[in-house]
Image (cartoon, rainbow, N blue to C red; front, top):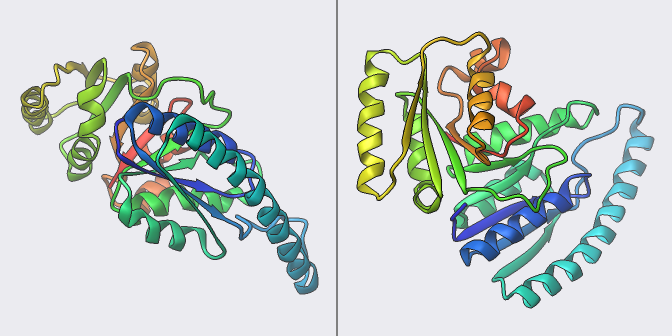
Length: 276
């Protein structure tokens, strides 16, 4: 991906090292600045913690553990950035993850978060983190899949999931710098209606005027959900990232009944960049 200012969400969780490695690799590839925001407040409260006293003690212990980890990681981070000549900044704060990320997002081009795994109680928060950051920050959100190999390329082969919506257009514009540098770009439309067909041709020409020769893909019918169809198409064309709009329909309806955004947040094994 080609963004010049990268904000990466860090906390004392299982996936924080992967997020940081992805951020550093993208920064190195694109001569970008990486801002690492380590939030020491626990992401969630385990289900087995009961009672006010136990909760307070857990928060104290978890915060202290996070502070210790932040010190260790900062040293590694700064040494790596200096060795690789990567512009960088490191911030440690305590507080609400969503609010702090939204504050720091004002000076970023993209924010990197992890995909929730739905196995632990605290993942209820991680689910909301992906949703809220995408909706609130006004910049693209790169969701790194669970157990992702951070040595893999991101942005060489891009699948743009197109629909005639404001969110899809925002996703294309938000990521134009990355799209224009990709080796291969696919423009995918699923079950296109007349308006979609018209806008697909227009956005294809729009990309062409930016020097992008995108390959147009149209899928008339699907045996699976649209979200799964997008993901399958990306895998079949060996794409390393999916670019899409988030919550093109009523958000409450998508959350209750399912939708493309919800499916990709839950099931994607390929990095997904979402814009709203």
